Image 1 (cartoon, one colour):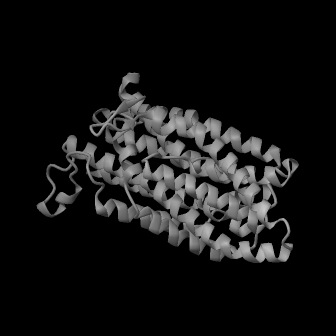
Image 2 (image 1 turned 60 degrees about the vertical axis):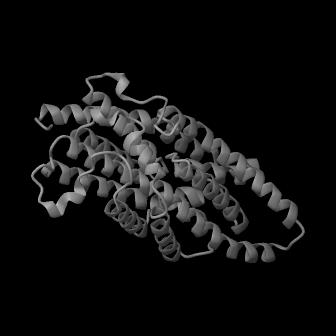
Image 3 (image 1 turned 180 degrees about the vertical axis):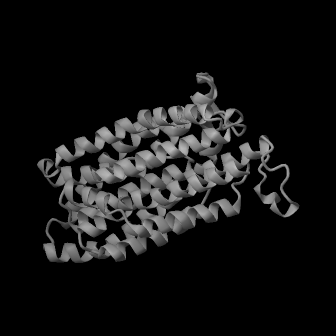
Length: 356
């Protein structure tokens, strides 16, 4: 039971860090355009992150049983995955780089599972279909979206910005800023909601995987009858208490802010006006919401970052500070392999120290 409580604590710590690490995704543009103060923006993002986190469980089910063979996972595997993701998130937060918490967690889980299976690569589900005929696995749910979602963000942001410019080019800057300052409140709320609907579910999936593993290995066999809610004999619905705890923890983390990343996203990449913030947030929110509906754990960081780049490129290609973008892209490229290696080494070290 102790190992489960450690894993649960690690999962909630990851969710809290995810909240303040990715808070910038929802509020960087609305802060940089001065539509809201930082405190107002964080309150808005925290509220809509909470609402979004309660909206569904499709992504959670993908994480809990669609990426690695759940029957080959131990509690040490899950702890190692979470530890890797936490370390990477804290490092990139300290550097002010908007990296993907999603890919950090997935990379850590794959690396830890590979170590648990003694380097048997078949433990990783590359591409398959579930009992309902839906595609699951790393290729359709992680790799393909990782490549396509940033492109969709860049192209979508540029296209929406171009369309808006066609309609507003004769309006005065004062009118444009007034109108889109109000509209950006809506787009920021939608961005917060979509972020919660995708990112919070990843930790829900990890906790459910931990519950399944603990049930399978007999960790809960001596629990009293009143604690039977902890037992998860198979993957169906995500337990309500898991949904609520993850939603509240992410909202609390978001409320703590993430000023280093907010500065990078909202100020260093490109100078934004309310119309640009509206275009970037609306594009990203629609893409992320679509991914959540399909159960795809897409990187909210990748999508909003490239949406901002696309909007900036339409404004003026040289307006995007490509040196900052290069640092961000390196963080994206390194996240999966580095976290995979961290998860692998952590699992090995835990086993050497006698953890099972």
